[in-house]
Amino acid sequence: MNATNHPISVSRRSALRGLRWASYFFLFAGVLAASYAAYIIADTEAFQAVALRKFNHSVPLAEPHVPIIGEVIGEIEIPTVAIKAVILHGDSPELLRRGVGHLPETPMPGEWGNVALAGHRDTFFRSLRQIRPGDVITLRTTGGAFQYRVESIRVVSPMDIGVVASSNRHELTLVTCFPFDYVGAAPNRFIVRAFEVGPFTE
Image (cartoon, rainbow, N blue to C red; front, side):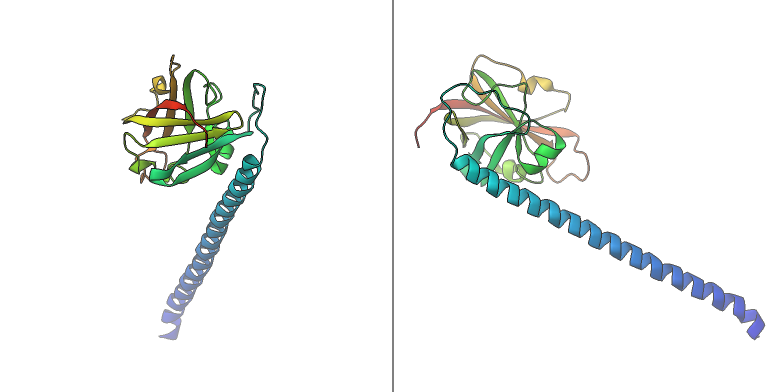
């Protein structure tokens, strides 16, 4: 009887030992993932705080300035949806993790054409889902402050590059992924098109 049960007991102990080690592994992986996520959030918030403070104390530029990739060029504010973030020149994953990105091939705010900004749907542009036509978007740069009024909102394919095409008007296009609650690489893009209502003095 004991000889018959012994292999079963060993097998059961091995299985329990394997489950125990698996639970330790997944616990460690969970703690590691949570720690990394916390680090990313803390790093982003710290970067935003420092960058906004530096920008708010920067000296207005009298001459035209060609920004370099990664440079803070201003801030975006949309009070109706509680968005306020620094704008970085460039659209690499690293830059979009820390701020809203300005697509380098598009004009700078205040210049003729279609200014295009991109942001992640789960960070800086999370509340963009609540934006509506008529809402006002303010871009502040060292060259001045500019206001835009939202004219249209639509969803397009990632292949539709026409949304950031050049134009002969003072336009602003905001781009983020869609659907907002999609898990993984989202299949579409959420596009907000706005037109400048004129430079203003704050």
